[in-house]
Image 1 (cartoon, one colour):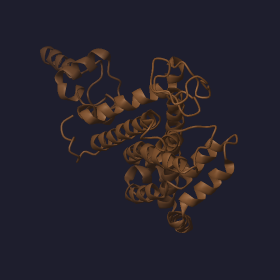
Image 2 (tube, helix red, strand yellow):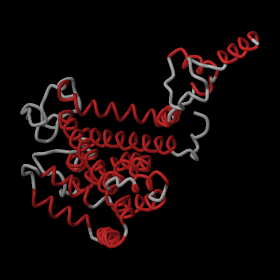
Image 3 (tube, one colour):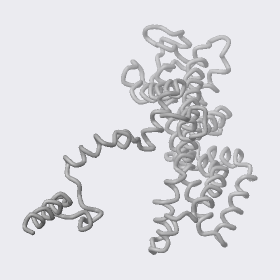
Image 4 (tube, rainbow, N blue to C red):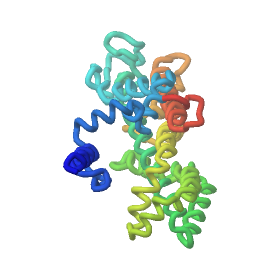
Length: 335
């Protein structure tokens, strides 16, 4: 009997882990570092599991045109930020000894009819256009996300009002309104901020409709219903649960909207309705240079080349982000 009793004790010892039997161990019992290492060794597939962000980054980096676009956009941004530190002239300086001077060691991109350095003006114009493009893209994407998601989530009278207002702005002649208001503001202090608000205020409607459609498909999912049953505030549900679930669309939309905003600013400034003197942008520089594009081409070609490079890079980045985020795109598959 004693031997049998000792045998049962040995079996009991073998069936215990850390002094507890498997039945007594809690499910959420912490795992030590050594045990975690053993698990990783026995399950190598689990240790190689990638997050969604890592998979998206790998897909983006495999797209050579997207990587080239990102590098080009960064170089243009560095040119806009630090170009004034490497140039010899400020964009407001006038060289009275060099009117319509071609590119030289003193004036790298030549000078204008008024004796101003084209390189310095292109740097300042790129900074203004890029700032307007990025700010407009972020602002109008945020407006579209909030209005579109809230309209679908709350429904009822708010959805009807939001859709009516969205449809109204789609048929309003936004170009004329922006032209009139920006012209009245002129070059006064805050005119650039007003111009950004106007461009963003008339550019969010189509994105808002897409966001509303996507929100309708996710607002009844289990995790949203669970948050609602736990009395989580509606604003928190929208900001923490719904909008992050459609963030892929918003990221791509914001990237593409940078190009649209720059084109809108350039078009309005070209016709004299956007950025007003003494402020400058790529649109105002192109408008000034096109009158002498055949006789003094450096005044026109420099800002036009920077504008084309910026737009091409942004479009490549947008296409790369779309392909990386969308699993069914051509760059999908194994990460």
